[in-house]
Image 1: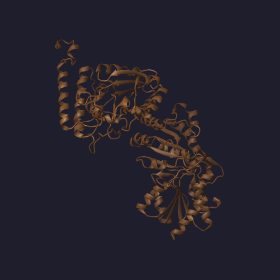
Image 2: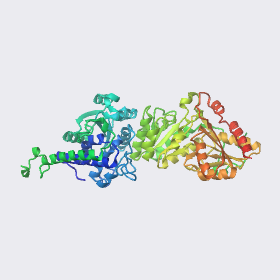
Image 3: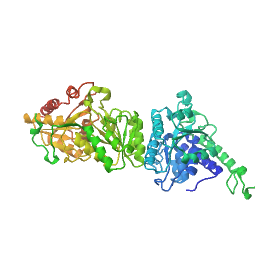
Image 4: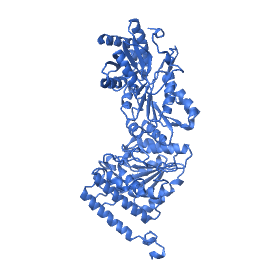
Length: 300
Length: 330
């Protein structure tokens, strides 16, 4: 598939994915809103720029592996996969319905392109580590990207995997932590304090990078260096805003596990469309770069 | 109660009741070394119990395909799931009490529902674990594994059978649980005895009642049959090494022929072999069944042979239960 190389294109795609998340959740009348919206920029950069993958041949053995550990944010995974061409976009409206391939929590056997089944928290990282271990054993160049949440760092299984990956110096394991500071019952630091995550991971012998999870340029430039990661597994702590892009959802933990109503979805979609128009107005129609970076004659 | 004098032994199975006792777990360890040579995808994972789960020989011979996980059973099975996703055949080994005991949900979600080709190995199962006491005597593992869709559950009866079962599950593609015991136990099967997943073995033909066992207690069942023979009771003895999928055909034939069944297992009487047979027959051919197992309680410390007597797994206990059952049938 064609990569999106311009930051403006990636931002517009992330906007589209957010709209699709809202629509599918409103249609499903159940599901999680905050996490998926918060991770839209990172999923966009992965599937449209970073990953080696083939949506028409999901089992291609040269692919990078994406393991979504916190399965409940699957609306962003589904919306991204649909936009990338894994399955028809109209299928997004079947989310959580009887007979759907888009199960409420992702199921590997239901939908081609999913690497595992997840939902119960804390076990994705060790599966990803197992995959990375086997790939290294076979001397394969594929990377394993594991997406994990801060809340699931309450789980002992997560830390068992952290030890394991460091022991085996799994430099082909790239973990992205959705550090949005919320979980079902409230703020992570009230429920079970996790800070300082960077120091924790460093002390566990990981490479650690901290990024702003909505700064597309920084996301892409950091993830691009994944293939050169050496000696240790890499933890990328992405500081994100839960509910990002929808003003009434942002930073409100009560949106962790509920969908918007039809009316709320309309307000959210109107906001997102406004952002889209704003992004388009800043984009050079010819080279697709933002005006401020555009050097082509037509854009002048 | 000389087992060698038993009549109606199934000659097709090439049984031989040797004096020598070997722990079933040794069969696992020896088979792994053979598998390591013949199948490059076979990997072994262990949670800090390499010696007692008998995976040490594999570790020494194939260090690259051996993964020491440390005392972390949730990680043990989930790393195994990841390895299987890349095409490996991981054997995740620990004590049954810890794996599957500690990591049931991970096995359910990431191995069974996810349908990954992982072999869960539970050593030191049953009351015969002995002096370590109830914390280490897995008596619920069959129940929690049997309830999982996609899972195959195997309880081999002796050393040779464990060896064969280990090779068979390596060949079988899908989630599998196999449990075995700590103690040295008698031999019944030989190198020549066939083993097929899902095919129960009729060790001795009979018509008055059918004793169905799983694991090393099958030997006690045969001894009980010898004692019954002296009382002119002709008992059939079945080694039901695969608890899931249950060999319904063989069980049904036995029920029709013998009219009453006695099940024996080192496990709670709920949810294990006796549970599986009761569930099946109650729907298809209601039959009088008695179950020998732990009766909704925990074990305790003690020498294995004394514990087997204390909780009613000895040949004599099986014999007495069988007598009762035969009387009540008439």
